[in-house]
Image (tube, rainbow, N blue to C red; front, side, top):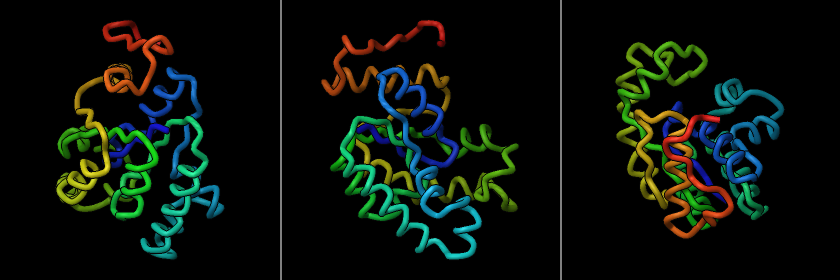
Length: 185
């Protein structure tokens, strides 16, 4: 299993889908799995039941996904690393790639996004900086590899991930070669 961690809006789902397609394995989004479990959207659940109840379900879902032990690419929620148990599960049960973006890059990417509660505050850039300061060390602690995702295209990020996995001996180059410089699919 390959797991992607990083800030909200850092590209985990987008890169994860492409990476899974490239290596021929299923893509799983932990937030989608949580929504299936709770029978609705995360935002109203979070507002009604609070963060602790949400994080309890998130931990259960991550533990179940890792216990399946099948090959897949897993995109986690941005706050999954806040719980030590989740960091342990991910680090010990998956190859963890941290898609790292600066708060400024995230702000540029997300400034017009009205769907993320995180950004519906007076100063979204300050909120992103605060979250980044809190979470960056946790992402790094959990991750096996850090990929700087500030500027590259999705295609370039997928290739960076493929190359890192190949160089580490975790992916057979004959299975799927990284295509740096190739035209996007």
